Image (tube, rainbow, N blue to C red):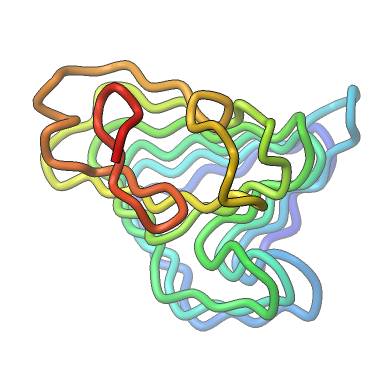
Length: 170
């Protein structure tokens, strides 16, 4: 697995990370950052992260300000002992930006008031599952969405098990 240190950057293009096991966080990728300090980042332009396992963040864990940018590919079928099967976002400063046509089976935000997910320019076939620490989190505090009405009509975002429409209703 990859451990990206503070200020580091990792780019995945048309590659597959599979069946990795970590005893801590991030079965495939662990982003280490310091709150208010230098942030590590991960960019995915295609490829797959699958079959990985960890204590938290089966596929990816972004700690305390880690920045994750997903522009395509699949992150699925990962497992962990806690939550965040695909991506586990830890802390109020961690951010996830998604566009293109990725398939992400579950992103978990441990801070329900963190506006840490930005979605824009999704294309057909995109799917993102989102789970927050509490099921009562207001959806507009979890993510910011921009894009066309067509991308909303296919209910590509699920939050705490419910499909989300353009105006935040399920």
